[in-house]
Amino acid sequence: MTTKRFLLPGLLFALVFASCEGQKNDLDPTLPDNGLFSLADVAKMLSDLPLENEHLGEVYDAVGASSGNGYDEEYRLTDLFAAPGAGVGDNGTSTKAGGYKTPLRDLFADYLAQKYGTKAGAGDIERYINALSGSDMQIYWPYSEDWDGRSFPIVTFDPGYGAESNYGYEVRIDRDGAHVVDSVLVTEQVAKERPVWVINRNNDAGYTPLELFEPDTKAGKNDGKKDDKNTGGKEYILSIQSIKALRNYDSWFGGASEFFLKSGAVDGFKATKDDDLKNYTPSMTDFMLVVKRSQIGKKIPFNALLLTNFTDQMEKIAFMVIEDDGGTTTSWKCSAVVKYNSKQYGFELEIPYKDKDDVVWRGQLTRNFFQDLFEKEGGTLTGRFGDVEITFALD
Image (cartoon, rainbow, N blue to C red):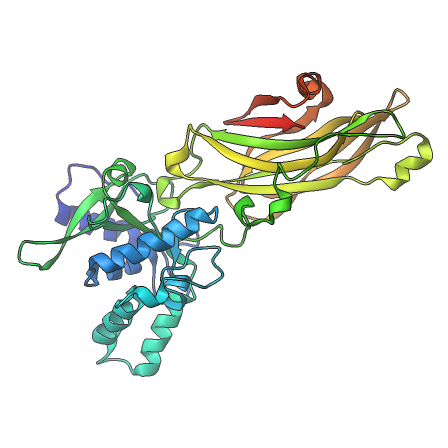
């Protein structure tokens, strides 16, 4: 769906509504998934609510909590109704829920009662609320860290089809204290300059980012390299120290980029004879990192433990970086290679991903790639893998 920037607001609304009505199909993210409300419906509803600074603070608290937990700047409607102020990863609890005098969920309930109260009974109003709270919709607030604490938002929604602009509802309070809503055109540049709330769908709550893993799964929680008494070699700890994403992979309405880093190797391999091969099987490491729009081009500390026992006999590690876009689960068939007695052996493995994912990079990291780290003993090494730069460390 495209619109020309010079259209007057009234004409813009007419064309956008006509365009959305003419494009109804299973791929349209603006359509309701429960037969009741679409993304556009919720955006309009939210802009009509009598928002006050307290409600802006509630959304700000929630997106900040999500971001702190390693997710995008998002406030799921599920949490909005069940635990005001809770972020993704808070497990439906909020320490600030009791601090909101009139949380957003109360405004939604009043709005639905006033709008449909004469046509529907209490049971139907509850059905509407359940449809909202049970959906995968959310308020996405890009660049929320720049909020001045008082400016009211423009409310818009993800139009789909990779669009980079859409109409939105500018919410403001005039000199008389009246709630005013105007139509405006919204782009990412607008979102950088003032608060914009985007109604879109959540696609990362089902994953666990590194921030929510137990501390001992992170790099730095170890005793360093160890001597192997059986082979006379050493065992190293391989970790990813930081990542820099060089571009976004999706429309800004869809939110941040969710990168998955997957590796497969025979961790701790130190065979001395053929019979030892049966004692080893490859293992896979899989981490998620959310890179917000404001973090593109910046080095993000990651500190993820990749291999706990990187030995001298490990020749090749399977490595894959994808940006999550969903779809049907498929797999990359690859191998991890080890070496002893001047012979190489490949262990076959399959690394899963979704068929709609963007494959940023996949291949094998060889022992030669890390050779400088072995020589430096404790140094770091940065390499470019497609449109991301990754810094490894070996201890």
